Length: 293
Image (tube, rainbow, N blue to C red; front, side, top):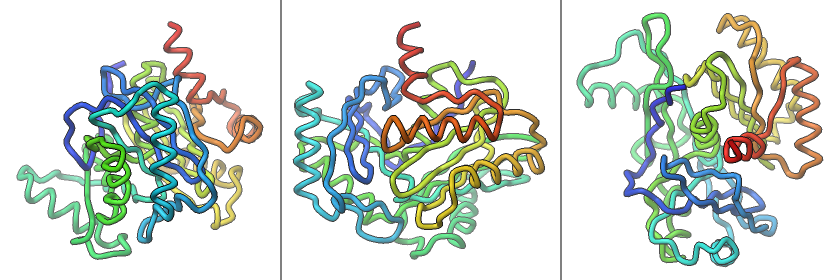
């Protein structure tokens, strides 16, 4: 399978050596592969105390920076990574917003496209666009049109995560969003179907669901846990959108990432499989399968 164009990071690399993923309740490190995919089946995590990281779009995220710095140093040592010179940072979906913007015509001038994307994103951004960092790229091309995936975060929030890297002596060569990183990792495994597949990312504070058509991102939805929508309802609503708006009939595969525990992942797998009548595979299993091939 040919890979999709990787959605760009907010910071241009040099190539990172190690990925550090931040989440509510843990930090995870993994070696970045030759292709630049910052997830692997050999990731190691360190638990964070409650309240150390509180992912949010327009509020402080790192409530206990010294605690987070200590956890990052500890897990880097446990993983044998020492003090990497460059790292890729993976921030929670709740710290950013992903928007899919359909365009009938894409402006040929980069400045015109940038202005158009900023105009679209501004309407749904709860802070001044001047305070935002923005990244975008082609998500899908279908029916003569183009869909742009735009990712926006508050500059101060991104700086909080960058400061953790600085504190452990590393340069943040890339900053990416968790669900998009998972999509790239799944695509890089070369095990995703040519047809339609579903990604479900579970986090303590939220759930993100993405519909993929091969390597094209067709739908991206992020819901906070406080919205009190059960996973089965989110999956059902997504399936209805898939059938009604995207003309879909059957997902060929569902990939599940995250989850608080093995038991939580198994419960989610059963709920999703029962609703969609589709095999559900965890991301860890997919990457281990690929690594053993």
